[in-house]
Amino acid sequence: ATNVAGYQGLGEMCPTYDFCLNNAHPEHPCCADPCSLLSQWDPSNNEHNYALHLRKAMSEGIPDFVPHMIIDTGRNGVADAREKCANWCNIRGAGVGLLPTTKTVDKDLIDAYFWLKTPGESDGCSQTLPDGKRCPRYDTDCGSEDSMGTRAGEPPAPEAGQWFDYQIKQLAANAKLTKAQNVLLTLSETISLYSASHSNKTTAVQMSLVRATSSNPFEGRAFYVNPSYAEELGVSIASAE
Image (cartoon, rainbow, N blue to C red):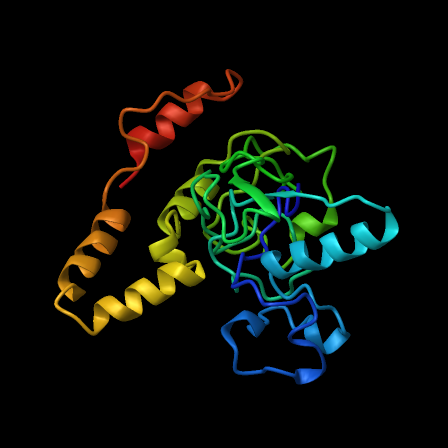
């Protein structure tokens, strides 16, 4: 699994892992580089391209091994949320990413997108806990300029793994749950949309995208909830705007 508890956006998958290196295709959407990794000769400018790069490296290093990936999309809906991409703790401006699904851009490489890290679980505590006590396991990375709890008006973050109401509401507000919202399309879907835009099917296509983004994807489904914060989750839901 890749991007576990991470924030790197899926992006668009390139034809090859090194497609964007050496400034080869700067205008191609798959070469968008919010973390400026390509200038460091790192071809993994998004999570899809990282999967391509990882497959190449692992296949070359382990004879006859062809790895398949699962990508954590629990919190990577906003690709450019961070000022510094090395920051990882309770990132301000982040959003939930794609709903768990086995419909991926390349089924020979990526088996599924999945929420491996539960959205709403704190990455780590602020220096001062919500109850006013000093956090005994404080990590200075959770005091970064991108971390929630470091600006005036933001509540302090609880310890890692505990429910963070402020975080889940921001993740929900910035969520990109569907491919329509992420503009994540397979080649065949791209061709279909292009063809429809030049025919009388345009309205139907637009309406299908609206339905995909406006309906409640959780309605009628049962979910496991960690009992340690089940009550707090209920409060978050009840108090959501």
